[in-house]
Length: 137
Image (cartoon, rainbow, N blue to C red; front, side):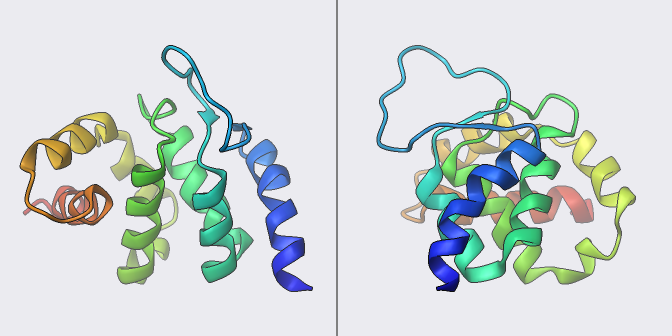
């Protein structure tokens, strides 16, 4: 079936994007390196909901932009995915979107979202902060 195929695709998509994907159930010690991801369940959810090309774009926006390759956390991946879902006009910007992400500090945005403690999931807060960064608001 389609969902079984998608669950296997996440490893192939990750490899194509230069991401080393680890089993999400694995424990990691210390800090993760650039392009290392443990969020397999998150990637599966995104593929099932939006497809493989959407996931590939999300991963590329994170790992192919300045200083963001170490930000493959589930909440960050979900925030970028949700941003693209709710603002489809951004996808149409192509290379300009990558240039815009070059000036965004995803780690800083994740820290700001965590510090807000507003009762919302961090990924939702991050989506709003990312949207503000991209619109200059």
